[in-house]
Amino acid sequence: MGFTPRVPWRARKTETAAGAATAATRDGVTRGRATRAAAARDGATRDGAAKAAGARAAGRFAQLSVALRTPARAGEPLLARAPRRWQRWAPFAVVAVFVVVLIPVTIAVLSNDYRLAGGWAGALGVAQTVPLLLAVTRPLPAWAMVLAADVAGAVLLMSADGVAGRSWPWPPMGIVGYLVLMACLGLRESVRTLVGVWLATGAAGVVLGFSAPAGAVNTVAVQFVLAGVVLALTGAVRGLGDARQRIAEQESISGAERARRTLLEERARIARELHDVVAHHMSVITVQADSAPYRLPGMAEPVREEFAAIAASARESLGEMRRLLTVLRGDGSDGGDGAGGGGERAPQPGVGRIQQLVEATVRAGQPVELSLAAGVAEAARAVPAVDLSAYRIVQEALANVVRHAPGSRTRVSVTHSAEDGEVLVLVVNGPAGDAVVALEDAGTGHGLVGMRERVRLTGGTLDAGPLPEGGFRVAARLPLDSRTEDASCPSE
Image (cartoon, rainbow, N blue to C red; front, top):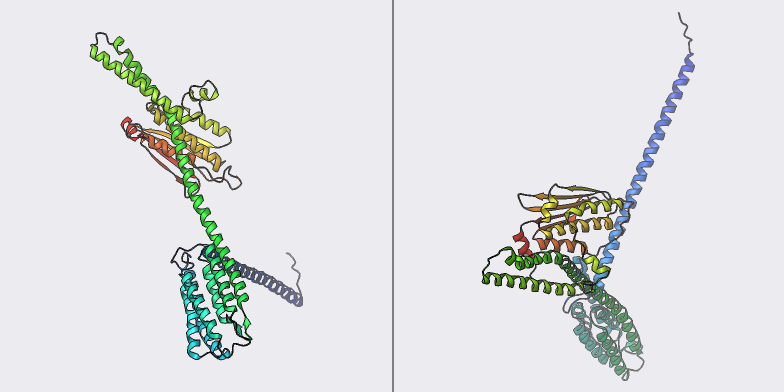
């Protein structure tokens, strides 16, 4: 029989209170941590929203600055090519605000301060400000109207009672409107036009200065200097836009010329390689035509002459092709004894050498899997153009993988469809690893252009492009039908 010690009632109560206090403390700590985590998440969310709003505002400002530097065509409003509607309407809104503000202020100042008759004050206020609305689309006619109105106003103010101690010949309101007009002119017109406008402004002020009323404050120099500053700034913005547009045009022209040169280089390369194929057939024709009288005794004389003509035509065609090849090479390697000539006389590769190509690529550190169907090499060898094109397509595709996605897993498949009479070439590579740096950021385009030209030569089709999950895919269909091949050969 065991003995269980009795715990006093006060001790049990103390232990219970201590446990409750510990649990409350633990709950409080947990709630505090949760509150701090929620506050941190809210702060991060607010910071992210503020950064996103700042990025959007910066993006809108960048779009507006680009549109401001983009030159407008004749008759187009300022910012006519801006991407957003509010940006395209912004010049009209700004000019309209200036017109609405300047009309009553000009009339009030002319009638109250200069003590010009109310009718003349109203006419000058309208004539000096309303043409600003035209400055958004046609700033040069608007400048002519505003300058004429300013000169007329200066002449009328000569006889005004309150001109003494006031600005003349250009009142402050007229200077403000004139500077708005100069900004519109600077963003639209050429440097020669801007210089002419600036000199005309100074000349008008100098001519009027000879008849300045007594006690008037001459503002010719003020408007002349301010107009020159505004024209210089806006003209610089316009010049930057013109320079950017010219650079873009030159880059477009250079890109087109580069693509055309790449195409011509690939065609010349294919023509050089095709020489061996065509020369072989022409040589066979020549030998068969020359040896026909010896292989077929008892041949009639007209038949002998026909075979002799065939052999002569074949030899002439072979010579013409070799002369054309010399022009295409342009390096004097055709018929030379140097290294270059020896390289050109080497046999052309085909599907049978794709395995060696893949092995060399694997030794270079690129993981490649090859699937070569049985009998495909023999089937492709029957059509030399298809045999060479299949090898070159795999070679170009693997070269592109090494340059742009080193280390990515690559799969090469070459199969033969006896039913359709075609060779199918497939090269697929996955995305490059994050830690791998591509050897080239941008290619010259020779690879894909060469593939398309080779596929077009055989009358096949090519499908090349990026994959949705990353990587690249090249799929070529090369028909083995000799009639398709002959029809697809370029006639030029």
